[in-house]
Length: 340
Image 1 (cartoon, one colour):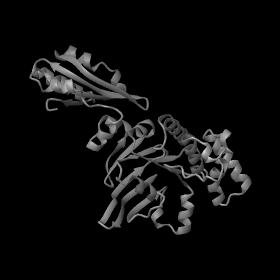
Image 2 (spheres, one colour):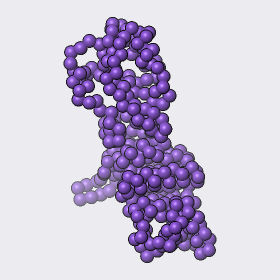
Image 3 (cartoon, one colour):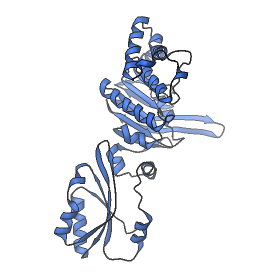
């Protein structure tokens, strides 16, 4: 488990003190892919570089598997870093070395004998699907292939933790998808914990188990992917989610809400198995209301359906209230839209 407590990072600039990370607390469970998303300047890259102490924190603690990295000697820290792999945005490959040479490089630094490091490097190159590129140079590779080399290199010392710093932001959509699928397979095969920094909510949606939203050096929202997507609390989180799934109401619905009319307009949010249950037909039959579906948006998140429906409920006020209470009692999120 990774446990970060009261982490701060302050810089001194000409305009005064800059608080890049400010009192951050976070727990990441073993074997999960944890996403950290935020806008430019939120402190994402500073945070991930502190996780292996490439950046020293101003204060706070970073515990990985029970070891506080901030208390280690230089020698012990070097040894601890060998169990933390890092994938970089711009690949950071050695142009003068082949794919095999790049992947073997961390093993060479660690003092592994030539025969063993070649064997291990070839094994990792095969794992990332580049067996036919082992003797190519970086200049002969596509962006997606370069990042696969970067992933293989990050795995060279059999890490427990893999850090990904905007690893897909330089890639086209197809390469991004293939790299994310590769990371998912590697996590499952090697039982790795992966912390993934990004500003792309599509990346979070496709691969992560949980996510934290970072703003001005602080985590403003955190939770499972299903919870965050189905019920975001902060405006920044909603903005990120709307970049991949538009849950904003169409203008025609907003005009309809503001018009004088009988009844009540509600928005129902649903997740998972609840999408298959006949709530609306039951509501109409048992509460003597008419339920007109005005708008719906359904998506899928890691195989789990989720989305929203906008209903216009007409009937006696007491029956409308009873029907809304029924929906609440079924575990659905219900929002009255009178004031939208």
